[in-house]
Amino acid sequence: MGGVIGKGDSPRKSWVPETKLEAKMVEAMQKRASKGSKVKSFDSIVLKFPKIDESMRKYKTTFQMFDEDSNGVIDHEELRHSFQKLDIPLTDEEINDLFEACDINHDKGMEFNEFIVLICLVYLLQDDPIAVQAKNNMGMPSLESTFETLVDAFVFLDKNKNGYVSKSEMIEAINETSSGERSSGRIAMRRFEEMDWDKNGMVNFKEFLFAFTRWVGIDEDEDQEGEETA
Image 1 (cartoon, one colour):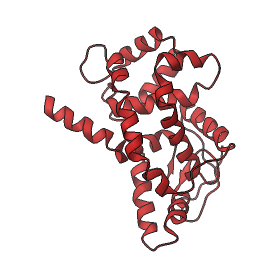
Image 2: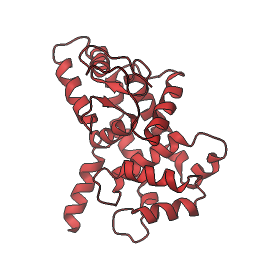
Image 3: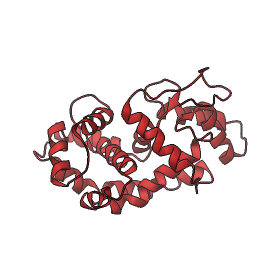
């Protein structure tokens, strides 16, 4: 799955997903991109931060349900067991891949912001009729509009619709908002660096989601809670 390289991007002949999960994400985002995006500017995304933040926090009760030992993190076994109880149609391999992808700190446990990213990926990837009831069991309909907003925002940034966001695409998106102001390049680069977790010059949907939890302040609050209970 090769991507079109824009000005300022690292020279690559093609961009190949590193894992099966990433390949599925790319395929799903390309499918969504074919429908277009309702987002017209990056500013319109920023304006939705408070509403998205509020929506995500309401999902804390679901996080607590998955956190069976109430220690503030969801381990691999708790995730697998909870998916089984809720009849979520995921194989052990898919659960393993999701857990490893979303355990960004590699501490064998998912905090709330990591769980939000995982649930959003499940929502994106489970797009068949069989999965509808499973989504209902997880309370996903309450977050559906938020997830759709995040998908729409990523599609807006992904100008060439290849499933990744590059530096040039981020600059283009910010310029559309800022009408070419000189500061827009710096803003775009800062936002892009916040998204590019693995520093490889391209941002997939998972990386975008993690950046979003930081932008709305979810991960900061989790850190503060951890310090208070330590």
